[in-house]
Length: 392
Image (cartoon, rainbow, N blue to C red):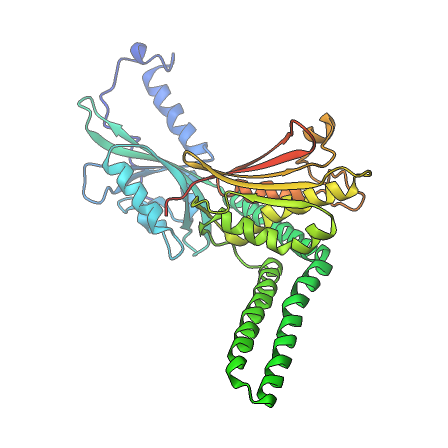
C-alpha cells in the first residue's frame, strides 16, 4: 500500500501556545492526531484544491474500509471514483457550486463501493485556507447512513400504506352514499334513453337531440363520481402538482353530499372562487380534507339531542400561505382529547381506528404544512390546514 500523504491543510502553522489545542510535544501531538484519524469511524478524505481536478492526497483507513478501495487505488484520483449510475447529478452540481464559492457542503449522496454495492453517504466537505485566505485543500468527512436512509424509506412506505388503508376505509364507510350518488345520474340516463326511443317511434326526431345531450351529461356525472372513488382506493405514488384547494373542497362536499343530507347537516363552502393554489398531490389533499369533513359529520351524528348541525369549509389565502378550515357545530372536545387528538390510535368514536387525524397530519406535513385544531367560540371544533401557497 502506498504511503499516505500527510494531513496537509496549507494553513501556516501557528505557535502551539496560541492554538491552545494541546499541551503535548509537537511530535507526540502529530502522532496522536494521525492515530485519531486512523481509528475514526467516519471516512476522511483530503484533496488538493490548487491542482487540476483536485486530486486526493490523503485518505483515512476508515475511508478505505467504507469504499473497499486501497489508498494506492485512491490517491491521486478524484472523489468521482465512488459515484455511479444512481448518484444524483443535481447533488453533484450542488457540491461543485459550494466548493467553487469556497463554502461548506453538507448533505446525503448515493455512492458506490469497489464491488458495486451502493451506500448512502452523509458527506461534509469544508475548504481549508492558507494565511492569505486562498483555498488550498478540501477536507471531506463521510459517514455511511444507509441503514438510516433505509429506515426512513420503510417509514415512508408504512405511512403510505396507512394512508391508503385510511382511504379505502373512508370509501367503504361512504359506500351507501356513493351508491346513491351514482344511482341518480344512472336513473336519469335510463329515463332519457327511454324518452329518446319514444320520440324516435313517434317520429319526433327533433327532440331526440335534447334527450341525448342529457344522457351524455348524466353519464359523465356518474363517471366522475366513480373516478373520484377509484382515485382514492388506488395505491399509487404521490405526485405533487399545482392544485386549487377551492376545487378540491368543492369535490369533497359533492362526494359526501348524500351523507350530509341524510345526517341533517347544513354544509357551506366559503371561498369557492378563491384563486389560491398549492403544490401537493391532489389525491392526498382530497383525502386530508375528506377525513376532516367525515370526522365532523360523524361527530355531529353521534351527539344526542337536536342541536343544529352545521359544517363550514373555508378556503382563503393569507399572504404566502393558504388555509383550509373545516368547522362543525358538534360536541367539541375535552382538554384531554385536544391534547391527544393527533396521537396514534387515540379516538373518541366507538368504531374509530384513531388513524384518520394522524394520517391527515402526516399528509399535510409532507408538503411543508401543518394541521391545527381549536374549539369554536360557540359549539364544535375547527380544524385548519396550513399549506405554502403556489403561484400560478
